[in-house]
Image (cartoon, rainbow, N blue to C red; front, side, top):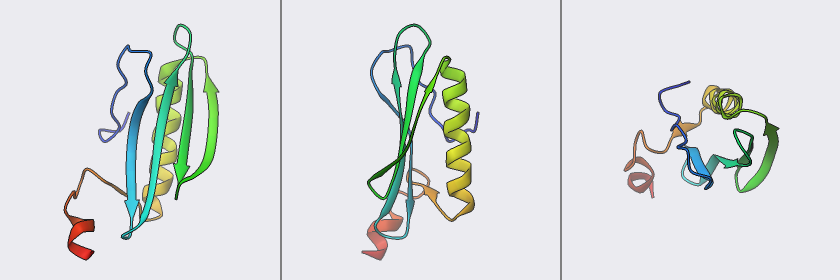
Length: 92
């Protein structure tokens, strides 16, 4: 697992795994929704559009998939919002 992805706890509440930004107004995020036992659903949005939703039988597989999506977006210039919190405000 990549160090920028937050590990989900044992709670059955949705967990924001990552939030990315590109430019001043483009955002992307991934949310994991725990289901019964270790099963979970992963959803991700790009520019406020739902781009993907997948069911996983294990949390670890969902986290791996979230890291793959985040890595693909990072290769396209998306950055972790937490990495530079004042950057967007400085450009606005």
